[in-house]
Length: 334
Image (cartoon, helix red, strand yellow):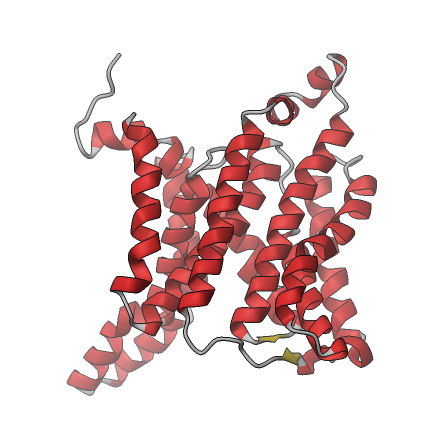
């Protein structure tokens, strides 16, 4: 009973957050957190439950973002209409890719997803007459306040997590897990593994594309290196899943919160601590260290992942019972 109450309590806290915290900075961080819940849940479906490790989130994210941006740029239609086609645009990219590349397995499929990212990134860079290339696409934000964006992101996050929960408890969900555990055994039982991998990919592509469309509307600017970034999108999605817990419903939610916090901690120089020390002491060494740390989020990500893999190989949610026993000295009933 308690486990069912925790998500409802969290939802209530999130729903009331912008009413209590009116600071734009913290609202911005929470919007990013909710966006990464959507992306992390999508990646978790195809990689965590179906066992198909993917680096293709940037391709789907960028497709959704450009669907909204190009609609506004060429047809002068509100980019919010792009929210309706952002997920479909990502599906249009993912379906032919999956149809061909799901014949590959393991590292070969992962490499194919890397190639998909690069093809789309270079393609949008070269096609300047259509995509504006590196000049990017800029739109005027619809809302001055961040609150509408927050609640839209919250709605997407809730629906994406619930859809993962429902899908995993259905017949396709059991097929996904059987493919992850042993694809050959699943095929021997008559499961159409290619079809169900395509279904898992469709889910991942759709929600990642929706997140990309939201990003276009919220940030108001995109270019190929921003939305098709391997590190900032694809690798980040993987880290969200690994840290939170691969193959768990709420793992991406926990992982998203931690990764956004770590990213912002490095970007802001430990929330302004090193900047304060540099101004207080007047030390050039401290100032130089602050400059290095603000650009060292990759190092922070790497250290965090190594720590999680060594101590909590199943992620925070996956190894929560272990955490309770060792840290809180709480033992689960036998």
